[in-house]
Structures are given as C-alpha cells and as structure tokens.
Image (tube, rainbow, N blue to C red; front, top):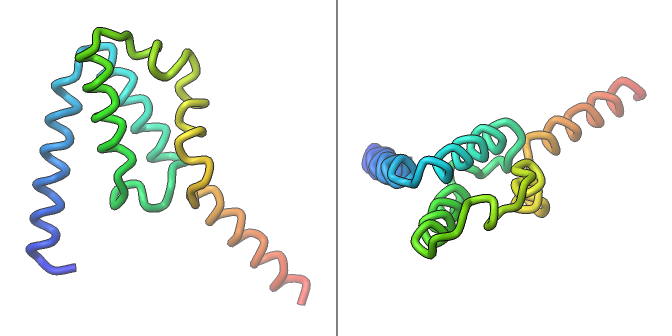
Length: 108
C-alpha cells in the first residue's frame, strides 16, 4: 500500500465519519454501538470492506423515509450485527484457530 492509497483511504474514512455524524441522533447512537460491537467481534476485513459504509447508506435511507432506527434493525443490536457478519471470518474465528493450532502442537 502506497502513500497515495493511505491518503485516499483516510479521506474516504473521514467522509464516512462525517456521514455517520450527520445521521439523526437515534440513528447515530445505534450506529456508534454497532461500530463498537463490530470492532470487538467483527470481521477481519471490517475497515477494508463495505460493511460500515453500507450500514450508513441503509440508515440514511431509513431516516429519509421517516422510519425509526429500531424499525429497521429490531430491538437487539447485537443480533442485527451477528446477522450481518454470520458468513464472515471474524477475530473470534482467528483466535479459535490459533488456540486449536497450539493445542495440536502441544499434543505432538
């Protein structure tokens, strides 16, 4: 990754953060909780992939149509997040694989 790629990535992230901050307060609060959750357990390609950008798109559309954020995602934010990443490789998967590998090495 070159300097230009890093600069462009930083510009895109700043634009994304500005869009998230422009969401209505209830949407913004839920987005921030989703972001925290995904940073803890989320997919390994979270920052490189389209997931967070797609959530902001989804929230902008929901807000524009006058829907409440919980009408879009339901009452359980974690379950919503888990549904989004169910087929993705997560940090938890990486950890479980490393534990299993260490266990196999110890058995040898």
